[in-house]
Length: 620
Image 1 (cartoon, rainbow, N blue to C red):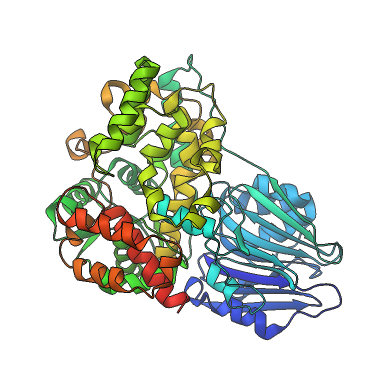
Image 2: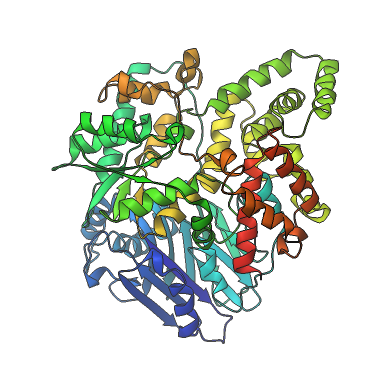
């Protein structure tokens, strides 16, 4: 993994090396091993390298084709690069390194923009074609690697992280009220939107092409999307064999590295299956890592140790005492904008601990989304069925009754959901509540717009003919997983210069998963049955059959304990910039009700606390 940055100045202006270096070096944590740059007329590219495959200087970037007319800066890994390089060499291309990156420049020469469809990996890259005077950007299918850009009157700018863009004086730090609204309602910004008005994300599975000498015309095109195609006549056993073989191949490809490699192991279904395949294919002992917490309800380390003992891994579990107050400024610096998923805290500690021993770690991310692993799927489907049975008068009564109960209460939320459409039920299952809107100032509410108009709801509605739960999965893969889960993992790991690889998010695994309907995978209330059946082949049932625990922290209790004085100080600070966007009086009311035990307001309290810390770093 690496950090990439670059710019295109208007025709007639020259790119300035110092500006490219500043953007590049703002992300030094993403690439501590080597630096590089290219200045070519009005185009500048910068690169920070984390050396993983071919650690020699021959693979430093920017990396060129034979006549140096095509160059690339690349963040990620191309796992099928050996097969691609063999094909390209047979076509006459000459290679100067053993790097997977070099497949990009020669692949561009051979196939042009279609090269992205041939890549099996996790990536974000920028390719400069000197002959065509074209800059080409691409992001992997699920958005495992980030890519941000800003198109302004002074030029086009891109970087892996927002901090790289803000390091250039031509990129404005003006805030986007819609992004700040999303951060409070969803816990993170979504799709193209960021907290900054000029800064956008390139969506997963998309490319961006810029002709640098012509009019400022960005062509942004999709090249892949997850297409659910459940087959009710599918042979379940044959499909399971195909799935197992495809996951095994995805794991094998992700074992390629010239640096120490290991795996995150929680002891759950997903990570246990990934590590089991690593053990079957690795030549030596597999190194696995976990962290343990003092709070027993949040500590999975004993389960991880049991699975590790069965599989025979070289296992290390570090016991940590999370300090949310101390780690918050570090998280803010890593995430660049308000980010409200508190599971970033244990992910941060796990990444920090793992990086002391290896440079690459495989993880089980993607299993819950692809194979129906969330309890909220089943709960929301039940609410949807109840809503279908209710008369219009019953729906209205449920809505009316919900308004009489305290905002945020469990019963109130359940009654409120009964009166909503399927898309609204999905949004509620993600944690959305109309009560969150009361935390936004009128201007932010207006900028955010109604939930049904947002891309998240449109994702859910795209496959209206599919069963409710399968639409939930599709929307999660295009929203929650990309904007929340993968953002969390990338920033926390790369802050420690750790590369994380996700075999279950291999697009060929996803395409196999898309064929299996939801119903048999949730039969009898057992979630993720397909992956369970595979994992049982390698790990005894008694080690895996336990309630889903998740990777979380006792946030509810912290706000009645160590975070209570911190939150009180935030609410007392009337000069904080966040009160231009969020309602201080409503936040105070929520906190009071939380302390009294009337509701669990910890998710929105953490979002407010994070936003305040971000404002202290970025806006003061």
